[in-house]
Image (cartoon, rainbow, N blue to C red; front, side, top):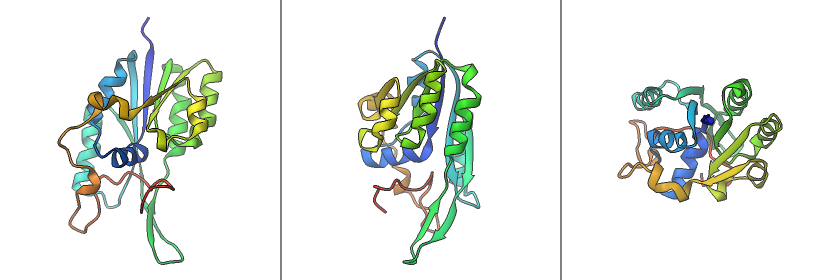
Length: 194
């Protein structure tokens, strides 16, 4: 019997990893690569979106849906700090954990594309319930605790030939009419450049 796989992609983490690596991911190739682990049950993609939704972002979400992803979105919220700097943030951690735990009866292995240490405890819960968990990210963006909690760790940099979208400019290099980057998927990690 083939292993049932479910894929959970933290869009903010994958976006930040692409920026660090200097190349972009092909989300169709990501599906195909991890489908090699068994029978793909479902693939979730979590992303923050600016409001109003611009055409490029809508096309990106539509493309993911067409590829077979279940896309979960949250609106970006803007806030200004005491220095007058504006930050846009949205957290989809609750959505990811909810889907991990409510769909666990439908998969044997969860593949989680994130390095966020906040997922350590949900990963431990899944493993205690007999599920296998694979974490995929890049080492410098993966918490030690999350990596330790998983059954397997995949360094996305080592599978570049299988998941890269060659010749495609990073979303951060593309700008909308009001100079906002396209495909903004979430806040920067604490150690990312602002």
